[in-house]
Amino acid sequence: MKNSLIGTVTETINVPAAKVWAALTTPEIIKKYFFGSDAKSDWKVGSPLIYSGSWQGKTYEDKGKILALEPDKLLKHTYWSSMSGIEDKPENYVTVTYELAEKDGKTEISVTQDNIPSEEMKVHSAENWKKVLKGMKELLETPNP
Image 1 (cartoon, rainbow, N blue to C red):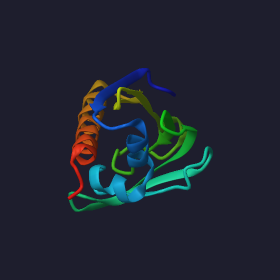
Image 2 (cartoon, rainbow, N blue to C red):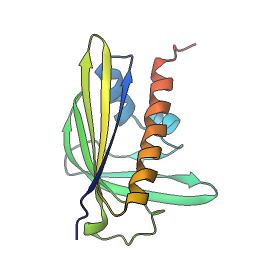
Image 3 (tube, rainbow, N blue to C red):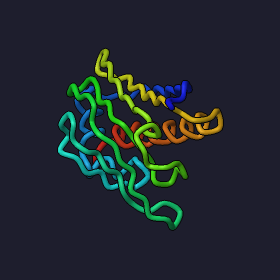
Image 4 (tube, one colour):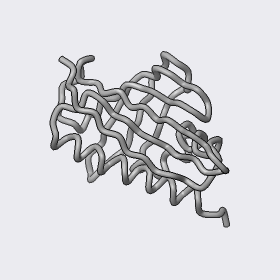
């Protein structure tokens, strides 16, 4: 059964959308801001997307499938976390949607997650997405030495 809770977090990053897109789809960059996760995908609609690593001493392998992909604008995928304590079955997957909108060389990125099972998990999810986007912003806005 799908849940009706939806959460959205938005951040403005002072770089063009192409740089934000690269940060969403380049494993070496993802690892720097996404909790040290190793991302694996061929970045095509219908393909798997796997995030793996170690968090607080526990290994994890989170997974999903890419549903939509429009370079510099949209990435949408299903997602299930091995650390969620929720059974790995289709109705327990959330949908994560990244939307990018560039204006005057700055990019607004919104992350929306649906099918959230509880208000507590919605708050937890929002806090995690805020950390992810803050990390991405800091990484992308810092000039390379």
